[in-house]
Image (cartoon, rainbow over all chains, first blue to last red):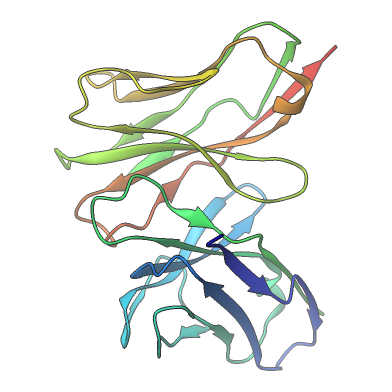
Length: 113
Length: 116
């Protein structure tokens, strides 16, 4: 069955370290997204991609970067982790325009000490 | 500004009762989509139901229905015959056609607690 996976599921790191969160989908979806979830804020968009070599900034992109070298993967990199980036991170994907649903990965809980 | 508002931080209901979770939205786009997701304590995001702005009828999916009132810009989720397994956080979301492609704008969520 097609799915979307994230790794690691839990990560503890220190302030200033570079961290990469992996997202892999086997739906063959063109569109992929990264959101962060914080209490009192719901989910907020970090970055998104419409296809290979395409990346775009979302609402809360500062301190994050993504790259899209193939259809299946959209890794999220925190260049220099900060305590404010402690959060739960969700990757999601959807087909090209016209899709009715966006499918989410299981999430990664990141703690920055 | 594009925005989703969920005014109920928490809702409590007994098993077998119906419950309505409120959602209002703000957009100037004539074409948009509205979604509801469920997030149980395990943390995953589960898609429940979708309503397109031009859909003539309210969406239904099993025990879930979406009460779509376009003029009032509301998209309330109705859960009929609540079950203990419905206890979770529920998020309303909008996909404005012209913003961030197909990315979603989420409300802050409503926690639903179902008791026996």
